[in-house]
Length: 613
Image 1 (cartoon, rainbow, N blue to C red):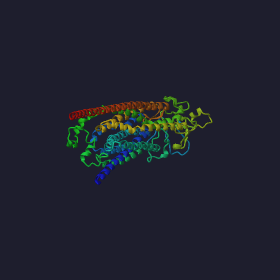
Image 2 (tube, helix red, strand yellow):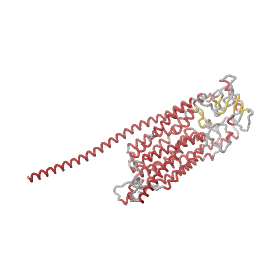
Image 3 (cartoon, rainbow, N blue to C red):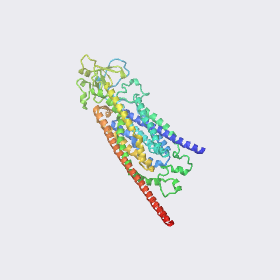
Image 4 (cartoon, rainbow, N blue to C red):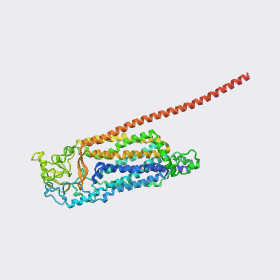
């Protein structure tokens, strides 16, 4: 090999490696954003005071964005500059992330639901609070706050920004994977895919870790005096600094977009770099140049670009060819069911862990066991004019959680902010001896110790399940890539993304959220009086609904995988038998021709012998 050929080979290999590293980092960045969005679902729900069913629609807007452009990007993008399209998609994703964070700067400070006015200017002296105050009075400040509450409709920005993120993410999978598979050795593709998806798996982990940290940071940090906040991050009204993570994710994706604008439209295939002939390179571009193959074309016609009209004309026939492939259709159906289970689980898993393992014990001691508001009222608080809609929980020293200081019958309070203590709570004295402490502190009572041990078991099982599920990721993609014609590769990957994300990404958060809402015990109240986000769930009903959906869909997906495996094995056996029959036919024909040749030779030999004799 000449020095020039060696340089060309090294340059092409380095460009392919650069594309591999860039795509892996981009997968990490987009997965980081996806994981962070899932971890912030609860914070967004509380910030805009919306139910779980609506938060499901917001979460599904990412897949809606994919739905708008995936078919066109997958089909027509294969004829364009694929790396640049991926880079443009990254810019759109970054813009979407910044738009998601925009409402924080357009809205006023977060005002959490409370049953009274916590006066932070008082220092220690007893104050006549909550029972003796008039809770039905709507002051001018309340009406002003109610008018500003209309800003809660700014969740639309989150919806639109997340949709933009989905649009920008579209080129990465069909164009990125097909580009890599086109120009790498066939035996190297599984390793490259494993590198990409292993790096991508680190993204959700980083996103959830950042989400966990920011969930403990108050939403208006830097804008309000944190000493005046009377709730902690364990309170169901607490909202973390959700917006910071989207700004960080937008900056990360901007950085990931840079290398794609410096990569070429195509590369020589690995192992064929030493051929400097342009026509040889063209033949190694199976999807770019042979997208619409025509056996009657000559060499010059093959080098000509296929017109847009021809591509459009061939789109429907290509779809028909694709979906006549039963293995491909079965893979789509199986992935669809599996993704329904995964998306529903990953969307509401933070809420599940919070409600089941963080509040299950305190809920058992809660004064609500029914949805009847009248059950909150008792002779000990009837003279207090308490609102049964307000949610401002306090924990009594007897381990009982009350919905508000007023409903606990508390007469006075001392301290400010988180250190506020309520005294002379008449309802507490009913269930304990008169000599007991009839005081309460802000917040719900702590969970019992056995919740921690159960949570560890749950996490261990979740990690084991995730590991087993991840083992099938790369083999699944290889089966998909090898079961379709080369010229349909990008279209197949795009249609898989389109169908799975449309039917597997959009509906699950919506129907999971709607069913989870049915388990709500205590709804929050907006400043204008409307129903807000759920504050407390029936733990048993929540567990049954959530786990029932996830486990049921997972079992169905595994059954479909079994059916797919049987179909693949049968098809392999059928192909093996056909190949063997062809080989036997060719061998028989060869032997037949050989036998005839031997007879002719023998006949000639006998004739000659007879002649000589």
